[in-house]
Amino acid sequence: MTPIEFAEKYGLTVSSPGEGDSREIGGVYCCDLLSMVMGRASENDAFLTVMGNVNTVAVAVLADVSCVILCEGIQLDEPTLEKARAQDVCVLLSPEPTFQVALKLARELGMV
Image 1 (cartoon, rainbow, N blue to C red):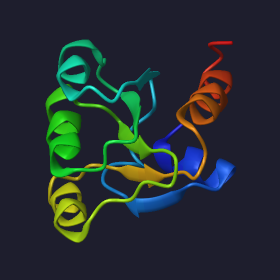
Image 2: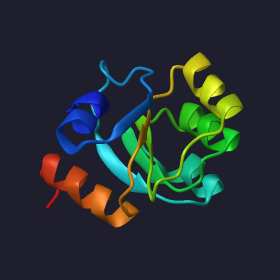
Image 3: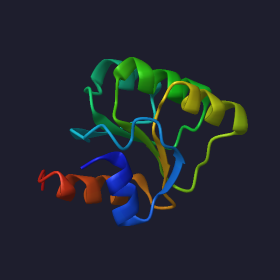
């Protein structure tokens, strides 16, 4: 499942499409401590967080995740959104808590 397919199925907002229609979600990584994400997220993971700043976009690029999903209604400010678009980072927005989004993803990926 691509990030865009996930967004369409579950009503998430696509803030930055990036490569969201061409990359498959391979796993789920939930964390708000960006230094941990850099060292522990796997390539093609969906990275779920409430940290909506420019460093989140940088970490997404470094970790080569398939998308960033901002939970709890968090949104990117305009400069950060521009950076995500410039870096082709797919950013999705959800009003739901991280756990709820992660559970949906895990079910889609056959992890639970």
